Image (tube, rainbow, N blue to C red):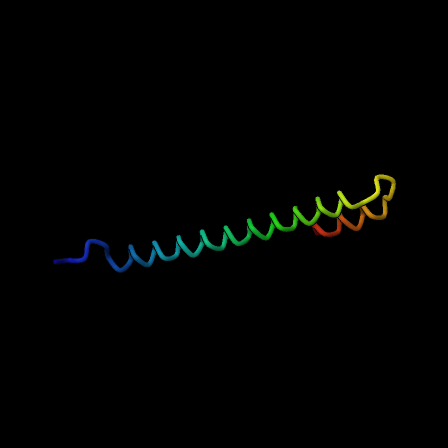
Length: 60
């Protein structure tokens, strides 16, 4: 029985999976950063501009 997918097709599929994994990893990192930022804001006193600046730096 012959292989239904060529070597090139399998290699392309592997690259697609690797790109998807990288994209998901990046999305998770960005989500973690946003969660940390919002947690920082929640813990800040509303009148403390310094605290809000520190939180904003977390996103840079």
